[in-house]
Length: 109
Image 1: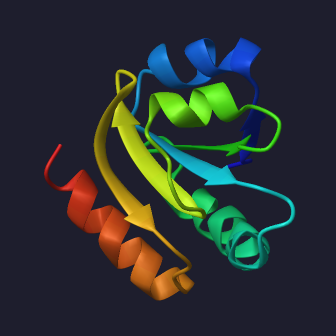
Image 2: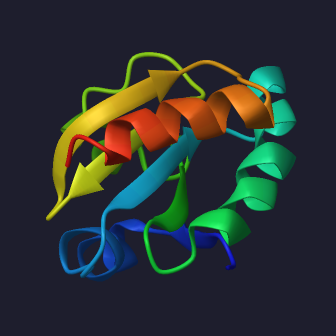
């Protein structure tokens, strides 16, 4: 599965109108931990095809979408269903730890 980069214009369609839960990577290009997270996020996206949609939003370019989710630190991964936040993962995590956290969250929704 490919990670989709969303904008303010595509956020509604990709997040709120998604048939499956969405994990949103709120990032900025200048953020070191965000740059470390990007390949991990891309790598694990394939394992959740059909179960979880992976999108990313550049908080520097689209701060209003980030503020709608009260993002105060990045990287921040928000799991949303129907556009409503279910849970979040803040900070960098290696693939194994991230998958464990995601699986735990998905088991509750």
